[in-house]
Image (cartoon, helix red, strand yellow):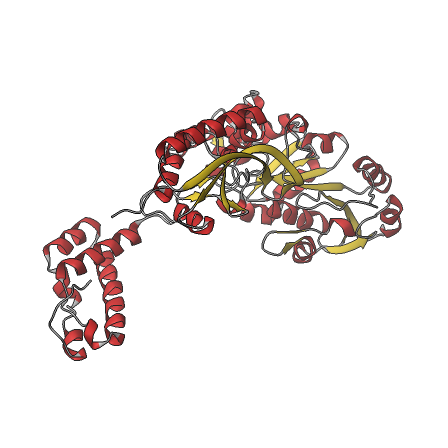
Length: 478
């Protein structure tokens, strides 16, 4: 904000150089910004820049006290205003190979779902209006029939996430009573969110049975008493216990539930609707749990389902009805945006167009496809970076599903690995993540190399990714 000058100023003189907010607002460039973006925002930007300037000038040494250039001050204010107006939420290129990256928004949405959202959200819709009867309807009507058909369920409702789904289920069906859960299923998900804590808040009493690694059907039988309200089975979607382990099958728990007149509810966590075994993913199907006799299943909408954040509860019609009538349901229900995107996603399933769902498309990419993409991308990068001091190669690696799904399961892939002689992998990763103009790129570091997994990079993003890498790896600008 200041240029070199031979003039030496006292601290007081130097501080008096700082113009007032009103004086700055009278300058042509800032007055135009105030007209375009509103006076209040420009005033806030001015005050932020002046505060930083005063802080710097109070501590500056005498030899660094130089005359203030008004043009540079105006530029700093304009830059601060631009920063204030830029959206905080922005797209990134996910080059990590983590398909359901929780920190990067989990499942990317399909074009079909977004088009349905655009058509219904930019005008009025029949969200809660029955067009046939000409009277008020229910927002469930847009997703419940699709879920029921896809899952073979009697009924289904949607709340804002899977934790809310489990909470509503416990609150409505087991408040004041006991819920029996195996110790091996008392899971914790992100941000220290734990099943025992959720149960305590719901008003239900946790009754732990068995041990961490082994729980028998007899453990459940012996724990049942007059206060028992339901048997809860929790799928360990974000960890695996291996070795000397056992737990009752869902069919065995269902049989016990029928003998004792207790509902058996299963929290599936991720929620898989299609068979993914051919692609190396072993995850229980929601429809299989319902066919096995589970009274209710709960799962997420933004994981393996590939839709928006939501919690889905499906199963027995009478139990789903009790949940829907509970006062908490209204507090947890989803808005028209979620309903539109979920309906669009479910229709892709119903019509067998699974290739429309990005997360499933990424999972289904073969090793051969990844090899071809990686080699083509490497050649493009080499052409851009010919003569620079860097090494590039294609190597074997693994992608993961992520998002608290399919622990210890990996998808074989091909990685583009890059190493520069001018900067470390950490510096390169930082440059990609924090560019001045381009879309941020999030990548991985392995053994001192920056690695790019194209499985999670959309093909149309590859030119931009190559440009970002070329800029980060190329010679420094003069």
